[in-house]
Every structure is written in structure tokens, then in C-alpha cells.
Image 1 (tube, rainbow, N blue to C red):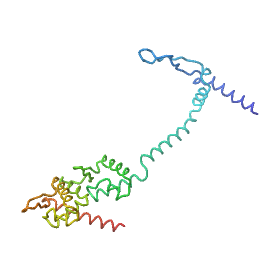
Image 2: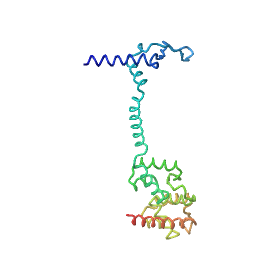
Image 3: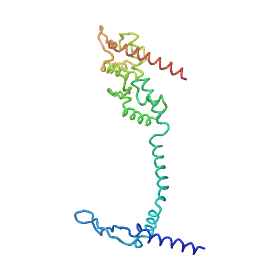
Image 4: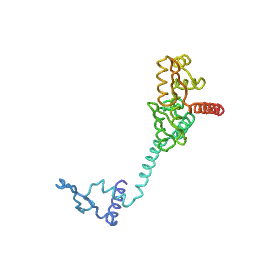
Length: 256
């Protein structure tokens, strides 16, 4: 039985080789022993009978020439598997949801830093940095950097430099407390600010220099002491920010 099968398949192979003109001859390009001196490849071809080629190559050519559809399943499986893998790597299911969370966090807290976004959303810092870069590339958010302070804002917001700098400083809890203290009490000395919020006078001096440099507060002499007050446009910015924060908190509680 085995001998009969061998003879049968051998006969079919011989018939196909001699009856099919496509398999009559195969072109091989022999490699030169050395490259020409001018480094230009030689395109000479030599036609040899198919039976002089490597056996594995002969079988492959024979199968693909006579049954080209046999290559389709392997190609289909490989391509679909590769695309499925790349699709998973490029766009995992959590990408849109994480990006929405980050965008909403920036919208609700303009000027927020990447580290605070990670802390609020619970998303890792590396993932936050990636999505922030994608949001920036899409023109949905913008980065504002000033003297070491880095914060993010919704790109469509028409903010002035004063507002952006004020919101950046508000990301620092101490400076936020100082600003709202000056909103309630317009003119305070360095020692009064230190006593009110419970930090040292040198610390107050450091924060006030930063705020003064960015035009958020101004200093003036009154007798022998130095006093501070908010710049004219800053109170409205703080009041609006305080109101927006309250609305955001109320909507968050309602949705919960």
C-alpha cells in the first residue's frame, strides 16, 4: 500500500513538472565570488533546469505555482495575529477612559501639574505623561511653564498671563493659602502672614518674592514694615476660581 502511494504521488509530480510550462525552468542568480571593484552588482542570470535546484526549493515552487491558495491561510493567520497584537499595544481598552479622566482633571483644576493629576486620578505617572503628550499633540491642552512651575490648561480657554500665573501658584498649597488670606485681608505684613498660616518668616519671604516677581502680589512700605496686597486683577481671578471649585465639588458629589 505504501509503495503504491509513493508511486502514485511520484507520477503526479513528474506529470505536473513536464506538463505545466510554468515549472519548466526556474531562474537562479548565482552569487559572484567577489564584488566588482566599482561595487556595482552584476545582473547576469543563468537559466538552469528545475531539477538542479535544492530539493526544498523545488517542492516549494511546485506547491506555490500549482496551488497558490495554499499560501493564503498562513498569510491570513500571520497578518491577523500581527494586527491584533499591534492594535492591542497601540490602543488598549483603557486608553480613551484614562485620557478622558486626565482631560477632565485639567478642565476642573486649570494649572494642575502632572504629579497631581496622577495622585487624583490614580493613574501612574508614566501613563499620565503619555496621555498628556497625546492631548497636547491633538491641541486639546497646553502646557504653561514659569520659573519652575509647570501646569496644564485646556487649550480653548482664553486665559491671560496673569490668570495662568495665578493658577500655577495656587497649585502650591502654601501660596494658595497666602493668596486667599490676602483676598480676605488686603494688606498684611510678612510677620502677620507668617502668624496667620503658621510658617516661618523666611518661608513667607521666599513665597512672597515668587508671587511678587510674577505680578500676582505687590509689596509696599508702610512705616518701618513691608506689606503685601494682591494686584488689581487677581481678586476676581481668585473669586472665580473659588466659585468654579465649589461647583465642581457639588457636581462630583451629585454624580456620586
